[in-house]
Image (tube, rainbow, N blue to C red; front, side, top):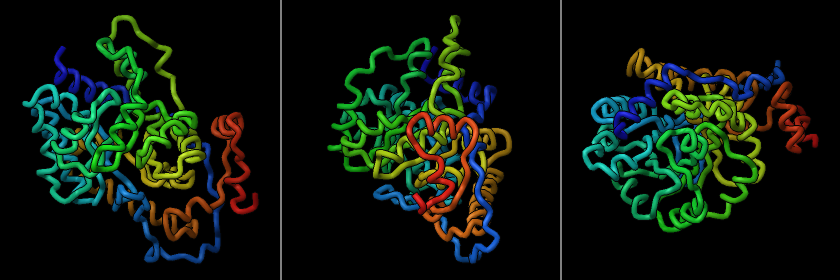
Length: 351
């Protein structure tokens, strides 16, 4: 199977398998504030994301590219949505275009459609410094995502089996690239231990990309004769991964992984995320309902976010970390086992 055919397989399997929604955000319940002393007109939803300089609390996370005309059209649509909504956008892994120049247009289309927007290039941790520079130049990117996808590669029939030296390559790229570097998982979450290693590399941000969204182990198992079923429920749920990373990484924390709506988004900010990425739900809307509907959906997210922030008395996104919320269920059990106090979230400022 060619790389381009595999890219289209991924899109179709992502649509058919859906998202598990096991991201643990349902275990968070805000404490209602009957006297919030706030107004919708005063709400500021612009995030603070350091040198990423994002304008929107939501970004379109990496989906595809390298699948010929079909992925070019999809990336073009997503780039136009990003332009209309002010959201940043990441492309899928560009390794396909580095190996086959005919695939470059399926990525370059995003800068053509969104000439002034914030765009993230994307490569795996096997990439060299030269490849990183080439990927950034291909779309005139404002930042580079380096994705970590050990479980996907192990499940992929033709995937990698050797992951040695990844941290050193990440450090070299972060030190020598002229744009910020974001480390991103691919749906299995970033742990506190991994974030500890990464914080010394010079990267600008970590996207926790936790369990609960598009499941690439499930997708790759669809392409295998012998299923590796043990990887299908593997990973750190997104809500837990935000807490893990935030506890040790002092720079920008991005959240993605099964985030569906404004309630998930506001809970991600409550836990400490600085911006939130969506992919699977955006892909479904783009493929089934089209560009105009996706633009409308993104704008609705902004409106819903502002409404909930008003109810909580949070004038900006950082204020959400000061709002009390009760954490129960599996998330509470997980955080407690990992040494985090859930009482500090229910009673901020009192611990």
